[in-house]
Amino acid sequence: MKYLDPKSDFLFKRLFAENPHLLIDLLNSILPLEEAITKIEYLTNELVPHQVNSKLSIVDVRCVDIRGRHFFVEMQMAFQPFLHKRMIYNASKVISRQLVKRQQYDEIGTVYAICFVDEDAERGVDDWFHHYVVTNKKYSARQMHGVEWFFIELSKWKKNVNFKNKEKQSLWLTFLTEPAKILEMMTPTELAKFNEICDALDIVKASNYTEAQINGMEKYLDEVRSYNSGMAYAEKKGIEKGIEKGMKKGIDIALMIVLDLKSGIPISEIADKYKISESMVSNFKNN
Image (cartoon, rainbow, N blue to C red; front, side, top):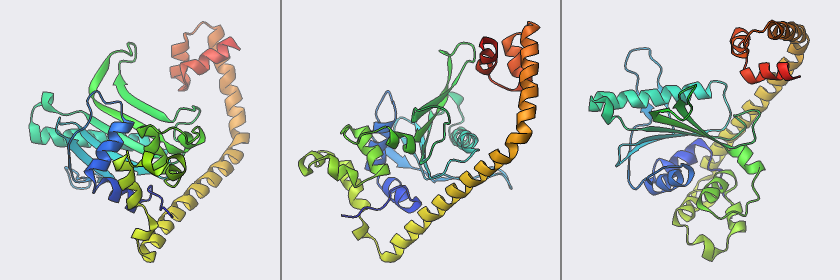
């Protein structure tokens, strides 16, 4: 049995923008919600601008549940440097749309922004699940509630999984990365207990689509892979070209940091001065 890649734009929207029971099950399995989603209403995926010439954003899936919580979901095949800012922008637009409708700030429902990324997005860490909230910089336990962001790195998850975990979250992530693997992991009797996964597998069966549709989806994925390869090559060449110039500048800055530390300037002030993290300054001090 051949299965198509559910990460393609066409299939992802067909799966989760047309089948509320699949979207509900996916979100309940992925997100650490205090109360499970039981019913949703789809909203337009276009975040229409308030003013002429303001930016229009289109997300893959957007909905609101019966508790007034708003969810929007995106599938990104390639990491983009501005991805985090775009997710912040989209979340703010979802909030502002509620204000127009509800008029009262205390009635604004929490916004959950979920982004599946098919390559490494959070460089330097092995974790594949990233949950962002707005916190007090000094007192991290204090939060501003109202919006939360989730980034799920499918490439990292795939590297660290043995495809034996039969919990719902793992099954959904397996489906999004290698749907055919599910049939290797489970017997038909075991799989029959997961109705939503069965329905999702049925939707991505290649036999359900024409040759032209399959070619279109494969072309889309090929274009994404070509883009990724081109960006990786450009980044590599840019790094090679910039190393020689950047090395001298880096040495100069390192020397200045050392001098500032010897002068007794606080780590926080040095970090702010050179636009680097306090932990990096601490490494200079310790080493």
